[in-house]
Image (cartoon, rainbow, N blue to C red; front, side, top):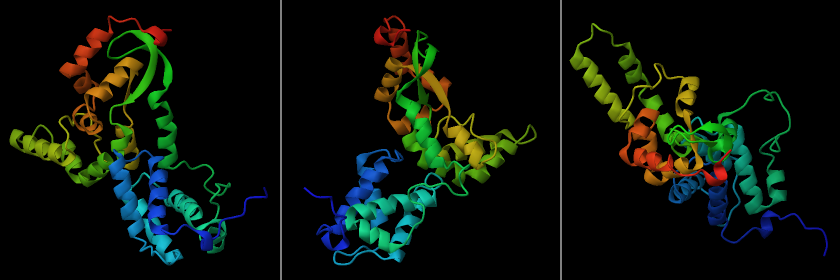
Length: 280
């Protein structure tokens, strides 16, 4: 057995476009920004098709630039251009080989070497850091639902899989949100009610009591990052009882979440159970 040879474009798989889509789909799954396998597959296909990949030809720089642009635009605000380029570079290397990717001379610093951005953290990395805590234990204390003193997990009131859609809705409704928060005591009740109903429809939410007063990058991030601390039993029950989008749009405050009859019923039942391996 000798050293593994670098795969070249000439030895790439026969059905390169379909392979590109499959590899891209796996890379997208690592971002945890879609709500289902079907969405990952369709997004990967749409992004790949924007580059007009051909069965018989390797991609050009222009093809890849278009693919990167589509990827960034789809996950607006959640994937930065440099990260999108690094991802597509990795996919190209998998499909057409190391030599082709290197000769393409398309992207610098794909390995993440230090540059002027050393002190900047993009949204995608911050999201990844936060997601590490979603299922793991973050400390000990009282579960906000069952009130047992146990090991706790962090539950995002707006699940991370829904962030792209929720963020987009907030930005699209920015002017209406500002109008809603600018209404004062002199505004008629009819105007207040109309604006509130309009905003609820735009956001698809049943409770807008704690939406940001003004839409900025920081305020949106703070809003979608809201959490509560739950024991493992209650955390699992919340996600079993409601879908991710239901949690994001109907149960995105602790009042709404803990006011749900089925969740409240589980919390009361759990409060009488021994914590078992989650005890402290």
